[in-house]
Length: 262
Image 1: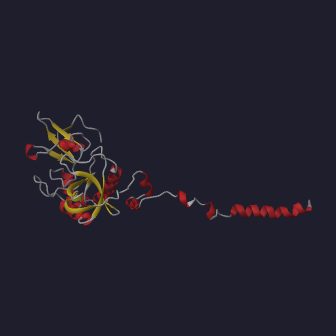
Image 2 (image 1 turned 90 degrees about the vertical axis):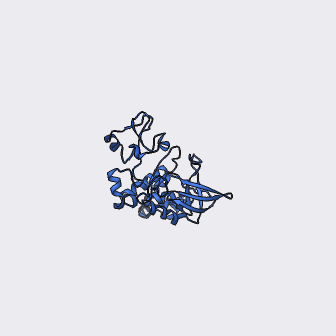
Image 3 (image 1 turned 60 degrees about the vertical axis):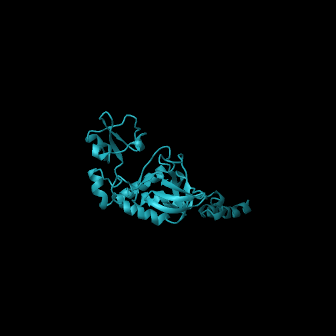
């Protein structure tokens, strides 16, 4: 009994020391269980956002032969020249035969050239293969740079969604929000007059199409409407672009009946 009483303080001291000692490295999470994150995760403000979008550029590379404008390039595929239209973005017009050069259009083209001109790029397909003009619809990567994202995040383009090609829609929308808040490019003072006024020459910032149909009805189409891409705006006939649905309603237009809500 005497030996037990002598050992008791030692036992209690050892227990107290164990409780006060921080966990050792051996108790840390095994390295093999760490979550793998693509190097493209640098695109995100919050690394946790990478869980929502998978960025895995294809390994095949193609030579960019020339840059047409801010969102269109020509590449060589299997010995043939193919025109590629970037998915999910829209830059101001610079080469449209029926429209003047729009605000920040030249800057968008220059930025696209800086990113991809003469480079080897990888092309990622979504659901659709081509648009109605026969252009390949692709997400474009130049090395570790997600080109579609860079154009929107820098204020050179707005995000534009055409279902079913929506794989990186949320990422591009976040980039647009950040560019607007920072007043970059299209969202800066140089193009602000067109954005506020809702004029027809919108600099690529006003996306709602105000169309007059064969019956004389004034209907507007948002980018989510099924007929949006096929609707052409004839400004001479009184058709116009709007920056918001409220602007369209105030001007006497109503939303096309087959449109989906944004």
